[in-house]
Image (cartoon, rainbow, N blue to C red):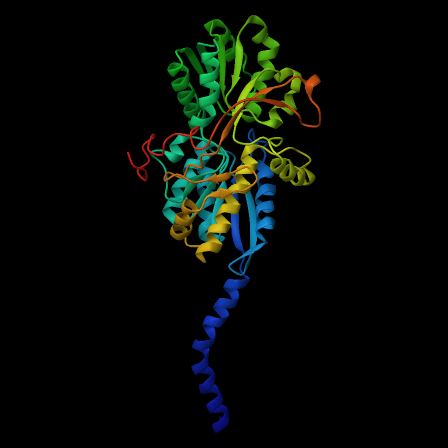
Length: 406
């Protein structure tokens, strides 16, 4: 080896450690920031969040500018089938093996609770839009978990109290047999009783039930003035359809839908749903801003969005703003910034996240109007009441979240 060659070899060895950080920096900058949605892609809650929430998340990324911290942003989605074990395994794999930086959506509350446990362990932000159980902002809350659409307390407050005060003072519940259904029924019962009403009974139906006949027979036999449907998605649609076939409402009982969305009405038919009451935090025809956003969303999906799609958008956008403001993907820093910054988007105006991760939107109470009164496409609801932010949602410490003052 010549003297010049030896010198060049030694110089190269000496320079190698100095070059490595530059290589790492280049790789880091080129690696996408990954947003992973764990959703119900093909099951009973497909139209609640599902593929539409991926579209909404991608719209948030687009509106943000497509990159953050100098890195491109990638949106992924997988089907957790509403099952806790599958959701947990996917969350762990995505964080540990695929470099997913933040998880979103969540599907059923049972799946959401499993994801929340993993994200707390791994210190990743979880942007919930579909899970609604108050357990997620209660005793099982997380410093990294944020509930961006609604919870069962807010869903129950309007319908349970309103119908009881209007004369529907006896109730029977048909309830989805898992955490979401139990939470929704329990919260509705609270408001029914506060309004002077009574609960005459209830029955649990497994998720994915196709035949509700035995449950509807029990509801009819109870003599309750109101049959509360503490379910959602295709389960809710099947229940309403079969209730119509049984003539439940013609015999004098009223159906209370505790979580109904626009796709449910479109699937069943506006006349079938006429007179049903529901509450939500977002309706596409609520304002010029919601109409403009819906026009963009519908151009990609040919469907109107739900509040859970809107929640996916709001969660992703708010997280990206927090990442930009802090200059880091660190979960502790971004979580603190998310609580510090108010939400301002097409349906949130100066909404501040509570210590337990609850996003306390304004909530609206609607009644399904007759098809003959519809003035344009997807004109489904009449506004009959509203509750401002944050009054519709539970106080931060109500359900025992250790992050919140008692």
